[in-house]
Image (tube, rainbow, N blue to C red; front, side, top):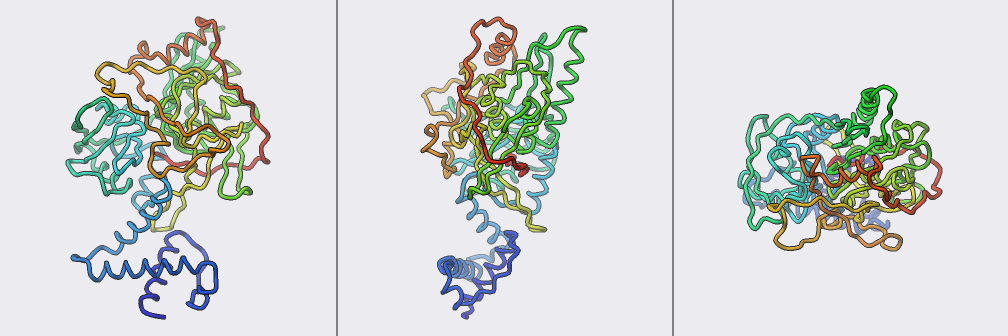
Length: 460
């Protein structure tokens, strides 16, 4: 075997090890030439040739680790916007983040057309206080353009020591020119659940789905029940999922189960039919069967859409607001030992009635859009951004579902009295609006035998 082919082979072995493969391949030219994998080995020869040329002939000596990580990132980025490589540091940061405390600015982001798109700022974080909004596009960090960086590289640049500043260049719909925003980094402690009594109505806002969400939701609801005047019970529950970018799949299932007595919650379908899984609800409703209104908007994504879709299909809640983001795919974190991990899209998820959310989103039963202040109104009409607008997004099932059309307004006024979506929900639960919103006319359909769905969804 030539030196070049040997080099390509061992490069392949290195990459296979990084991907967590457990099988050792003993490949020779004779073997590869007689198997269906001939083409992949030919391409690996090409990769080995290019890598060798770069290492030997590039104008400056490149870093081998950077070359390999960039190659892996390029491979995963070519699949869809949510698959990526996490080096050891990024993997540790991700694990800390899902526990509810991490360092940074406090924004959930994705990559769109080479720049960073804000899915949602996290409540009470430096980004939220500075005025960062869902759908903002970040083009430069401290004057350096983001174009050419991977999502992980851009996120890494936004992280840094606490109390150090960073300057973002932002393009915002309705603004003629990009503008600068200076933000001070801080420790981000995500308070996943906030709640209060709106008279005799329980209001609960979930800002993310981390490891604490379900447990804290139960505690907050129980505490608010005890705050009710003696002899009185709550009229209903407003569950606010607006600008909640998602998080852990098992937490989305647990939160849905908190309000359901029985039936399917979510179906996940992988590459093969036998990989179909279903999560089922168990008896017990923390709201004691009271009416529920769920608020969603264009910043409600992933795990938020699982909850909204499950409660809508079971006609357990009325969905109010605007169409959700449309991220209907599950990302599994696959550890690679000391080398980090890969975040890989492994399944699509469906509502109990079999509806795909991917690139379509959840449509509210009652469409209400909060009116934008004059300074935020766009000069020209633009199509709202959602999953369907992301380059390389995973396609939905066009044969069975409506056309791709995810994304909508994500504006929520800070003052509750100006929040038209919230005020409408409260009036419905108080009986001040006589006509009850029409609920989704879909009933849960039979599904395959229940299998625990415990893979973590991507934290965006």
